[in-house]
Image (cartoon, rainbow, N blue to C red; front, side, top):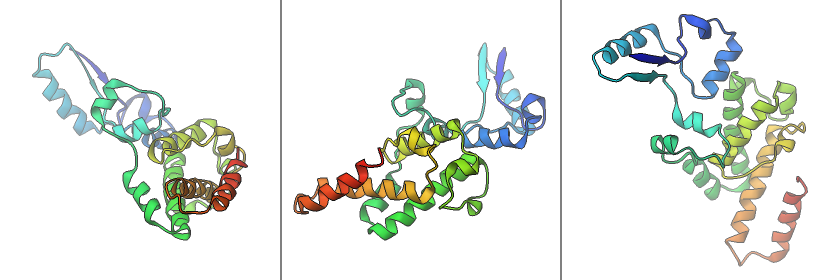
Length: 203
C-alpha cells in the first residue's frame, strides 16, 4: 500500500517550518497530523485493501474559500455544498448602515487575522493592510474570501493600494446599499445615482 501523508505535527519537514509557515497552512485550512491520529489512521488503513490512499486532515470550506471564485473543481464541490456566508449576508440585509459597518469590520478583522496568523485584537482598522505585512498572495486570499462569502469582486489593486479595513468595510457596505436600492424602486433615482457614483470612484 502507498500512503500519501499530509503534514505531521511532530516530525518531518513540515514540523521544522517556521511559525509563519504553520500559520499560513492553518489559514488555508491545512491541519497537521498529530502522531496519535496518524498511527490510528495507519492501523485502519493496513486492514484495508486499497493500493493507494491519501491522509491529510483539511478544513475543506476554508481551503475552497481561498481558490479563485471562477475555479470549479467537481471533487471539492462534492465535499461542500456552498461557501457563501448566508448568515453574514442576512445580517447585512437587515442591519442599518452604522451596524452594517461594524458587522463588516468584525468579519474583515477575523479573515485578516486568519491570513496573517495573528490575534484579531492586534489589528487596527484604520491601518493600511500593506503596513501589516500584506503581500500579493495574502491580498489574493482576502479577495477570494470576499468573492465567495459576500459575492463581491474587489480588485486586487484596491487591496494592495494601501486601503484599510474600515475603508474596505465602507466599500462593501456601499455595495450592499446599492443592491437594496436596485431592489426597491420606490427609492428616488437621485439617491441611487449618488451611491453609484461614490461606489464607482473606487475603481
